[in-house]
Amino acid sequence: MSFKLKFWGVRGSIACPGRDFVTYGGNTSCVEVAIDGERFILDGGTGIRNLGHWLSKKDVRQATILFSHTHWDHINGLPFFAPAYRPAHEFRIMAGHLADAGGVERVFAGQMQLPYFPVLVGAMQASLSYHDFRAGETLALGRGGTVKVRTAPLNHPNGATGYRIEHGGRAICYVTDTEHVVGAPDQNILRLIEGADLVIYDCTYDDAEFGAHLGWGHSSWQEGIRLCRLANAKRLAIFHHDPDHDDRYMDRLALAARRQWSGAFVAREGTKIDLRRLDDETAPHPLHTLTGNVAQLADCQTG
Image (cartoon, rainbow, N blue to C red; front, top):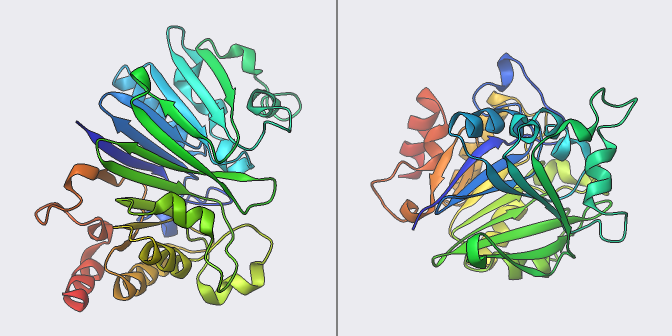
């Protein structure tokens, strides 16, 4: 049994290339999950472009794309997803927030219309199937329905869906974009992430910044830690980084989060995680995505 994931895009709101965003990455949300040869893609931000090149190199021709929601930063990489333009490829596209708003197919095709984009969705020669469900449902995906995917509604403008992917006694949760209520832990999220091996959570802000962004639909890394502790989750991947938070800021955040809870680390573009080895003391800790003296300092300070 294999259960692995890779971060292809970890940024929120807008891609931010540049020399100040090299360590953690500037591409927007996209996470690949590979389970026994099955591929699941969480969101289609700009990170999906590089994922597409990798899938083509490996001749991977099938995947299920699960959208948290369809704001620009989570879909604007899709027109540049090269495998979608190739025959003999097959992609299942799913969302849990659009059943009463025209469906995911309408939104998917809508961003590839004039005057927004010069190439229409019909240019994609892969077999594309569209499936709408309602956040809160449980899905049976993969060959023979062997991968259980639980879902939950999130607190975000226009709606969003959180996912819990389970297989072989392991579970990862993808919980972005969502806004918490101070002092009132989100019960939908707590039920979703209970006992999970890894929780990927919307940590756009810290608690000090959060109050100035009420209604924007995002949360803080401190709330992520609070939720994981309450739910007895094992690891927290700090995710959906604010585009104004450069590498220096993220280094400081990583240290602060690690001091507060040893299970927390900052997701970095390109980081790979094998869920089977999360409890293996010999496996590299995701904290080591930090660079140079910063990683050494973190190890010294946390023991």
